[in-house]
Each structure stands twice: as C-alpha cells, then as structure tokens.
Image (cartoon, rainbow, N blue to C red; front, side, top):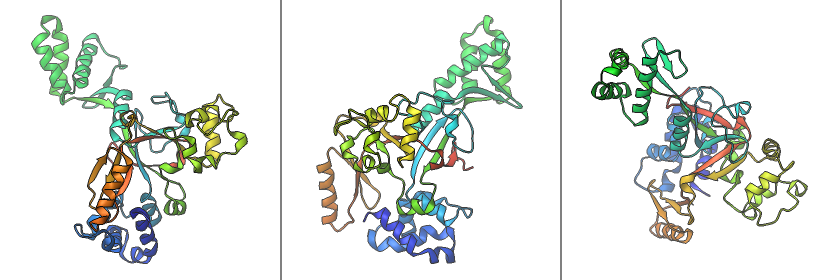
Length: 358
C-alpha cells in the first residue's frame, strides 16, 4: 500500500478525532497516525503538510468530505483571458480555442504552462486612477502611441513599463514625440500601472462524489493517455465496447488515432461525449517540455527529497538502496509534467485565481 493510500485509510479510521478536535487539527491528526511509518526527521504536523500541502490551507468552511477529497485530487492550472467562478464546457473556444488534443477543458500540471497561455491570451491594459485603457479604447494619436511604448516595455519584461517607456521617449523621442511624452508624463504622475488582464486558475481535479474520491482518487490512471500504447491501458480499453472501436483497430493502435476515429469518426465533440459516458473523464498527454525520446523517472524519498533517474531500472535501484537502509520505499513516477483535457466541468474545483482563494 502506498503512503497516500495509507494516509487516506488512517483518516477514514480517525473521523472521531477529526470531529472532536476540528478541521484545523487535521494535519496534526494525520501526522500522528503515520509518524511511526515514516521514520525520524519530521514532526507529525510537518510530515502531514509535506504529503498533502492542500490540507494546510483548509479553512473552517471546508467540510470533512471536501478535505478528504483533496487528498487524491490532481492539482492543475489553467490560463485564461477571462475571469469566472466556475468552469463551463459551453464556453470552450472563448480562450485559445485550438483544442489540439481533443474537445474539452485544458489544464496543466506545470503552472508555468498556464501562465504562458494567460500571458498570450490576456488583454494588455493600462490602469490609471478611475480609468482602464486598452488598445480598443477611444484614444487619440498620442495616447495610442504612448500605449504602444508601454506595451513594448511590458513585453520586454520591465517591472515598471510606464516608467521605462517614459525614459525611452525622453531620451530618444525628440520634438516629434512631445505629445507622446506629455501623455507618458501624465500617466507616470498618476501612478499608472500596466499589464495583461488575465487569470491563472489553480484547480483541484477530482470526482464530484466525495465518497468515490476518498476511495478511488481521480488520478492519471483514469485518463486516456496519448503517450502510452492502448495495449498498456487495459483499464481504459475495458470500458469501451468492441463495437465502438474503429474498424481498423489493433493492439498497436495509438490512443490519439482511436479517439479521432471513435463513434462518428469525424466529430471530436461526439468522441469526448462518448468517452465521458463510458466513464473516461478525459485525456492526458505530456507537455512540450516533457516529450523526450528517453523517458526519465523521478524518485521521491520519505523526506521529500527527489532524484531523477535515467531509466526505470536505475530508479528501482535507488528505491532498493533506500529500503536496504531502513527507509520507507520511495515513490517512483515518470519525470516531467502532463496536461489534461477534461470532458466534464463537474470534475473541476477552483482553489485560487491569481493566487487568491475565491
């Protein structure tokens, strides 16, 4: 049994403690129940928090079932030009819209991926006291020119785009830019700020049913993995009736080919909906930075430290070495990060928007 599975089992066995001591004591309760299994080096609460950091932030408004659900949830991120309180399948296409890996809601394990999309899709704006200025605002020539300089400074990574633009025009603008200079001076005196109006959502991907999430947490194994052969995904194949597989399906068929030819064979919306009805929540695929010719493996030790092995056998050797020295068996997983395409918006809970809880 893995450490996370043990953790869930211990919480199920200590509901009485949780009720008596309150939700804010969950980290300590968890740590007390598993401290003897993980060896010295961390206090009970420190260990609980290192395993499930989300529990650390669980407030009194969270129900016990909601906190239990967080234990197995996939933490994923989404970048968007929009602000909203709930993900909605009907809004697909209002963001980046490419839907390159299937029809659904896109999420990334790597927060930098979501930030990149938010930066690309976000609307550049300049904010002065009581006014927001964007490219589609009604601007005169000097204001439009000034906004272009500020936007360029922001793109170049300047921490104070307005000040940087003002400095540039002051130095190089000359008399022909006097009107632009006056606008920039006014914005600077007002303390104007500039940036992309975009949102990065930190989310929890989990089964909407708390009991199911506690017993069988939503994980990578539940998704159609585009980077694994279908023959290596027997649990996924078992859910698809043979008569729904493409006519030319074979053991070596790729998951992407199967998805593209499922059902009608032409409609990604229909394929996603059919897989959803069969109990498959979505698609998983490696992000661009993780698609290497030779897979690497991450070995996570009991104290939270990690090492990357160049092969599965090398990772197993590390794990055996740790066990032989009396430590719990490390967790082995493929290195790199993945993206997810969800077929159902009920699987998503927003934890934070731009770092702030709703």
